[in-house]
Image 1 (tube, rainbow, N blue to C red):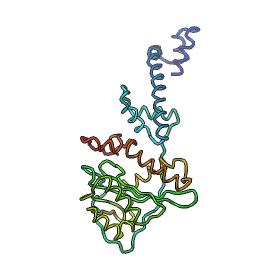
Image 2: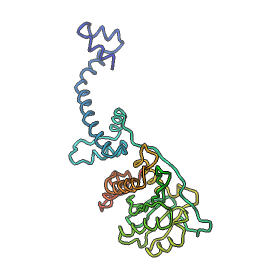
Image 3: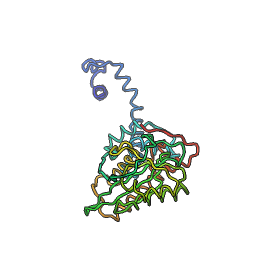
Image 4: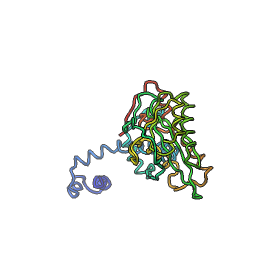
Length: 299
């Protein structure tokens, strides 16, 4: 392309034929390149306009969206008549130096009870439900604070829509934490009768206190193998996403108060606005609101 540009810039001084001979290019290729110039200018202009929209979405989502979610957000705008592919978004994001956060952090928070009752794995790593309020997964993850302390988040996630149906934040990992999360899910759904709740073998989940709450709500417990995070990978993935998108370049929260505020805000955003690949790039709440919604299993 640079050689074509050289020919075009110097064709007033020398014959095009001679320039092409010296540069060893076909004249037909040069004229083809020249005839495509208006289309190239249009593409440059279109890319500039799209780049501005990409930057707006990327900034609004605090730098957490990658190319696919940015594309879905723009394409879902009713005012947008020109749909485009995520590969074009990825190209423009690379050119603009925009990259979604991909950092992950792994910390062990599971403390198994020595004499925990045996609970079968009812999911076998199949985190799929045909309708809401039937299969849930949950976990506890730690949230590091600048003063050296930790906060802890317990979750209850619906496998149908990936909705965060229940959650609780506290400065401890006692059974009350996971009880509060399950109680919230019960309040959101109205009832949990007949639902399955899948977790790891943490002592809070195997405690008699928690088992009694599950029985009262009509919930059947399910647990993966001890020491195998893949058996609860959906909950693990949620934890990693939350920390990546809330903490971003920081390693800790400045205070427990800020931690509570920012995590609560993100959890609300997650359910109501964050586009989820599982939901066909809709939010979990929007996915559930569509009675005809069909599952899109993310690879």
